[in-house]
Image 1 (cartoon, rainbow, N blue to C red):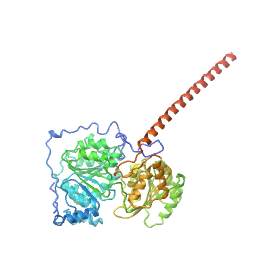
Image 2 (tube, rainbow, N blue to C red):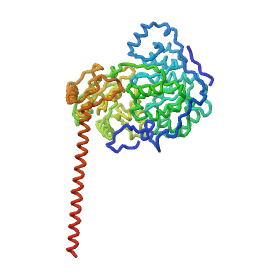
Image 3 (cartoon, rainbow, N blue to C red):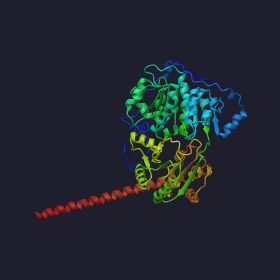
Length: 549
């Protein structure tokens, strides 16, 4: 089957320089744009869709290839088992095995092969038929699984079957992204395929001037990639609208919720017609994402690639070294000396705070290694230049905070170093997933200290699942932490946060109350002594003054 086109971009955190996630929709806007006055989107009203006459649109374009149609049930089951594809839903189309079975226009297939793709990834093989059939879709797949093309190619075909844009029309396809870096990467994919297909697109994100973005919207674009805050700005100022939007993508939905974007997402979805097609993509499946899917997606098909439990990419060798905090810098330099002797040595180093990112970057440079850094205090211009230099291998070492690196997609990263261990195992898996992409291998080094003890059990679970060698010291820390009344994740589902036992939390609350009362008494006694000394000094001055008279 062929398809033909119808004629138609920070405020400085003063508390130890830490890149902190903001749970407030006012403070955190558009993956880098800063909030203005009031709640973003507060002036938007939800349209009364029941009173509107909605223009019909087409969303089912899929006609199975003869080879796919004739494939037996046992062949399909074997393929899904080999690719670790798990499905939930009804009337699920069969997966494709080759690009030629997709029914894509020849220009799309040529571009796929031109970029070096040999066959569809698991998420593409099963996701394309589902999306092209007009179904709502929830895709649970790790970073680097090929999910961007899973929704971009069907989006382009969707656009080609709709009426051409008229003056004042908003986009037909909207892709929401948690960060500006990810949004820009999605647009790069759109440029590669959209230009050949004749589709116009733009990227809306905070931290960049609005003028050029507004001009694109004014000219009319069929596909918009946006961070939530900046899009709401344009919707409120009526620079664009969602009246023509019939295909919505929520990319990294778990990250958007984790970063506090749920209120903005809800306001944006309210502006889109209820019979839209929605594709939601997530690396994990916590209850918050599930609740959002249940609310906004009708009769969706869920596709999961890989294990349902939290799992790291098995192509990554994970090496965890238990050490003291003061040893980490020395160990890092020794490790970099070893890594930089390799032919492929592109490395990302994750550090908790912005201040430490700058300090460690300077230290690395003093030892003669080329390094750049990225964190929340960098301007958009600086971030873009740093990422370009890193991608182009002008600098083989990138030092970054979690928040700044979220959404970063660089194909040839060979090593990841966790200088500081993250707050939870989901972030650990997400960090090390920067390497080992597209079926390549990679290595992740982690410095683990006693201060990370509460994450030890979770880390052991991740390492065990991936058949990695576990340090006896790490096992001892995990066992010791459990024996003291604390518990880790165990075999919880992906997306759940590790927690303490109820007894532990109760003890902690009791200790906190005791400390507050003690501090209050101490301050009271200190204040009383201060007042007493003040009165005594005042009385002495008064007596000296009288004697002098």
